[in-house]
Image (cartoon, rainbow, N blue to C red; front, side):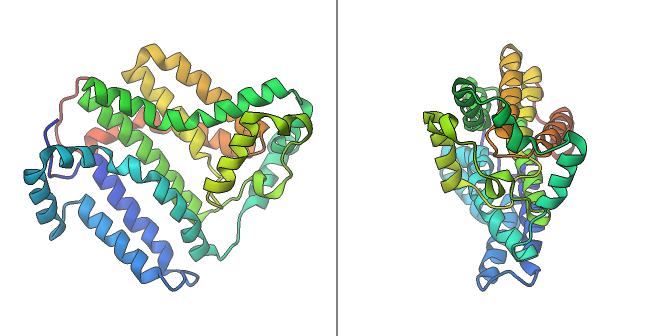
Length: 298
């Protein structure tokens, strides 16, 4: 892969998100550090689009350290996803000042499902082995995010790597826009977690610890977990077909597990899965529309 000083499709999407999300900082509850955050967003967009004077810097780095520049260009957007996720809680606070739309989603749950599956599912199936399996499926999400990109990168499949990474980042960033302007906490913040024998499992405890220390408030609907897992399954059919059945099973188990464990509303998962299918089908075409002509062989 030769270093490329020009914007790729993933750069254009990243820049668009940096600008759209910065709009949240213009709302009245932005806090005293908002000028610094707006500046960071604008600089990030300029760097992603290689606008002056950022273009001069990127071109100089590309010529001086081509391997380093290539690696940064390939991975920066995916690497920044966790930081952008953390920022979501700050941005939706700026817009809504602590208001969340859980009552809307809970009403949908009651209307569509006749209750609250995130509260009732574990009580209906109180089996520790099932609980541990579903919590493990939920944690597999972190492997799903990075695994396909790493494998394709190591294999030297340039186009497939870029399209898959683009699809994952696009799914995250679209989810984050919803999290900012329509924040939903999710049942984990409002309902008690499944207790008794289910709470004693090692994987159960690890899952709850991870969410306690790494979740962003207001980032439940739609489920980016389900969206990304579904996008990866759809793209696996195109670029990594031998593992397509595995990714489908992971997505299904992850979705069921997130509801069972009380981490997400069922609505979060259904909408996330639908968005993932649509995006997975559109991503290769959108990538071509946003990019220069690149090799299309997988």
